[in-house]
Structures are given as structure tokens and as C-alpha cells.
Image (cartoon, rainbow, N blue to C red; front, side, top):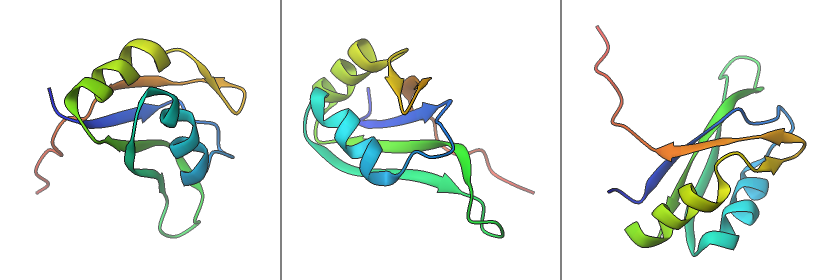
Length: 86
């Protein structure tokens, strides 16, 4: 298992700090990033969190998947590599 997580179904108001604080309950957060549209600077509704260890990442998935962040239940799963673009 990798220590990078995908976080989906984020509220539009969620920030990088919100993600970091939310995942801090599961362990040490190395980075937390909400993905935003380049043109509108608005959240795309998902982000990525990197935990300091695989064990903490597994704990985050087990304990935070389905929990509410800023009023929305988020989905937490292991991040998959980005598919190549043509």
C-alpha cells in the first residue's frame, strides 16, 4: 500500500488546511492538496493527502472514509497513478 491517498466528494469550500487538519486525526500528514481548476480557481471536488507511513494511510482509509468534512461525506482511497494522456 502507498501512503498517498485520494479524497473525493469534497465540499467546494474545503481548503488544503481543512484536509490537513481532518487527516491529522489518523497520523502525520506530509502534504494535503485540494485540486482546483486553473481558469476559475474553484475546487474540482477532490484532492490528495500524503501520510508519513503506509500504516497511517491505512488507518486514514479505515477511519475517515465516509466521515463528514465541511458538511459532506468524503471518500478516501489509495491514490492510483495518473493515466497517460494523449
